Length: 158
Length: 134
Image (tube, rainbow over all chains, first blue to last red; front, side):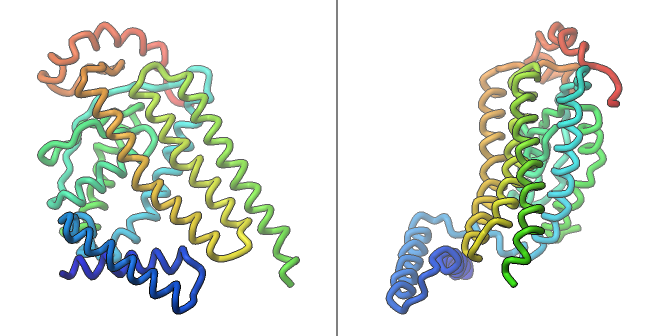
């Protein structure tokens, strides 16, 4: 029920932000549509702590700036390598532990890895990730585990 | 009053646009230069993140109404969630169907090494790229 309410509120805010026409008629129609979609979602059983991870609260927002900074740095590093004539890359497969407890947090970790240029997650199995890394530096940074720690902090179990 | 803001906003917007274009072009170059499917995914990730990201933020500075900014950030948000998922689906599909990555180092464990028997032979072709980062 809590998650049904959240998805309804999320839908309403997305609709309000996207609509721009604030007459009684339009708002009523919007609210009805949101309600219909919420009911459909409940019927489809996609309303749970996985689809709407509200239990994480606002902690993901604190994680995003750090992630964006990492992405920017990794982009810059990769761009430099791609433009250099020697193109210093050492493609490798590495295994990394995902120490998060919930599936949502592990997916967030795997997605963060893939989003960062230089590392792509190939498999996620039982708390262990198989990652394709393009350079030694990218692999070492991942092994260092700072991202793992920060995602665990998002989960709130740090 | 409003006119006064156009120049600095345009400047910021231009810098971001050029930055976004730079990363898109370099990402495209990477697609051509990198040796195999998996390493090319990294270059594609580059256009997905900083390339598209900088372009969208740059366009937000050109907005004439707050709703345009909201919509641009919606797009950015969807991109942040969907592009790694798509990239992972692609990489995983290739991997489980036995497309072998060209590696500069042997795989981390025996089971993988057995699966990827010809990676050692492939190693040599990657060594050309080995040198310290400038």
